[in-house]
Length: 142
Image 1 (cartoon, rainbow, N blue to C red):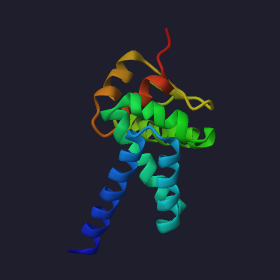
Image 2: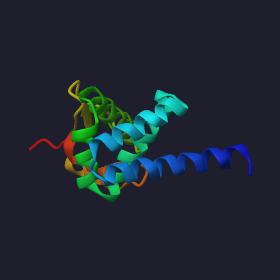
Image 3: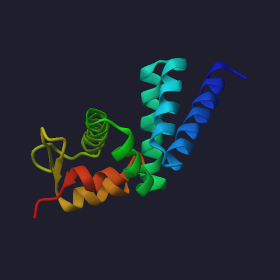
């Protein structure tokens, strides 16, 4: 087994562990799992695993994702997660040929204002993780 495969296997194992802890809906279990990962691999790696778990849950179990965000993240961690989604969405929109200021606008509040047709295309695109977040942070002007 090469180093890359070993890393991916370990990441998947820790991701599954984190998702299982969240599925138990026990805040102390989730926080203990995160702390154990941080002690073993460093806080940045533990945070990456938690974000990956939340993105996975956003698509597979939105209710559990919202529970985990409300009960297991500090407010600044939620903002970091939203910034990641916004950054990914802006890059995707630009890559799709949309123009900032004309087709969408990124706001300092972490929201994105976009046209309905732009939002529909964004929702259809497979490379954007966490569609749950789209309705929360992407606003369509009336």
